[in-house]
Length: 271
Image (cartoon, rainbow, N blue to C red):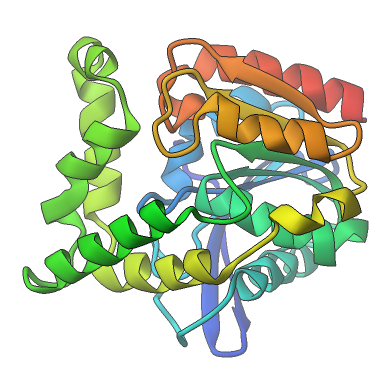
């Protein structure tokens, strides 16, 4: 991702680092990344959209350049961190795109801060974590704690679940970059964001969401398959849905061209 202007905001003892690109007077896009990744996840979207939009990609607490900060925290805390970034940049309304953890933050934004959103895109995410997934998070964190404070020991294992074998074989450099991004994060970021994920429950409030919504699933995603994400298309009034053929848990990365076309078309409709 080409270096943009780096900024940071402080809120309740937490520091959120972000990177801004593009025309400061253009419509704003804000990107929230997946758990274990960072704003670097959105390099393909920064490249694709910065000529037409003001693009802001941020690092959630304990990911990328943002310190872990006070914990425990909730998904609503992360949403307020996003709003603090909007305030710092003088953005009244933005299109928000959230992947996995970032999409969960998107639910909190859409429910508690709707006036700040022009639209929200939920990418490979869910509003409540099934018990089996929550147990997987807990076991992984406990196992990693015995190995130190880095995500590196688990990066290969996690990416094997989140990406397809065929894609990894065909795109070794791109896969290596994902591993690099994940491995750079501290274990504490995984643990505390996992606590926020386990505590959330938005699936019963979907009817309250009133902003334009795009739901995007990866065809071969394991944690949030298309049939799971169809709930959000069906329960959120007016929501659109796209399934990215051949993609895993990170459609914006492993099928960036197809994702960018879908997202760009949605933005044009959302205004």
